[in-house]
Length: 415
Image 1 (tube, rainbow, N blue to C red):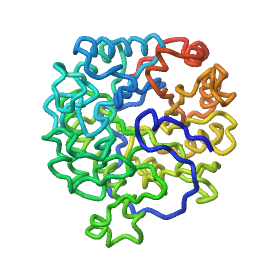
Image 2: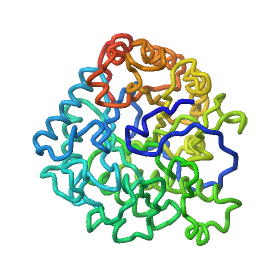
Image 3: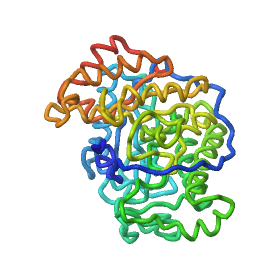
Image 4: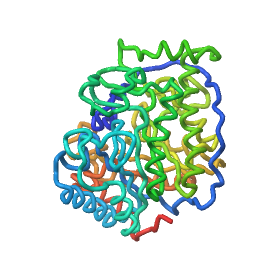
């Protein structure tokens, strides 16, 4: 089965599609986020992701002037408006770094080319103001645990917490991660993110699918010491790891409610929780990566517990895909969120819409429009988010223009 590709674009582990086993998670304690004062879902969420890691979408390259970075960002916002979208999801902490001043981690290298170097402006503060001025929601996209796309701590800024506390990190598959099994790490990464939330009136806190890293053949994620210290109450290491991820989600949910009640909490996971041949509650798919077993992310539980306000499964396959059919994934998620109050937005693979694609469906400019038409048959689906911004701008085979023409005849305000 083919890789979906987004993680390669974001310089993360590949989403290799190979079978995985089963287990049952230990529950984490956390307050459900509904109903929250001042928070309401958009009538229809029309969003786009703006990835900053490796300069995927913005800035177009490191080292641009502050004025040029600002202009590029507002141009992306203007494109969102022109495409009749109503939300942008901006990556502001791609690799344990920051895109706002006076944060607990150094300035992002993707701004200046040198981690820790002041870019001369406040990207997140400016982004919130400029998005709101255009009637767009601004959801701040954070990556909780990824530290670097390399394993060399000496390349980090000298004040980087991961360099000062190397015992907090684990090297895996050529990358460096904070260890999710350490309670002090979970507290720290929450405080980093909540610093931005406290400073700026963001409309949402957004995480993607990086919790424990995607599995790499022949490699072990070395959390032996943490498991020995904290895993004794669990039947297996897998149960303990899922508990760690559950705890991060539930604690962040509760803390976000206190600090900025109007902000919504959303997560965009890999779309397969479990395959039905592994678990009767799973989706009728045969994907090789299952978030429950491989990323230790019990995404279904987070919905059922109400720890999040919205979920954006990355349904990056075409209608009729032989092992991960969009037409089977969306109904499964619609059933999962039904009655929970959690909004379902579908993550769409605009980046796959390529007139030169090896897959016939993605060469068809109508494929993505057909996704939206199909999803609208399920009232639980409240919108879509498109990956990523540079494809929203370039629209190489006209798929985005087709979506707009077919489904977005007028602007819909986000609030």
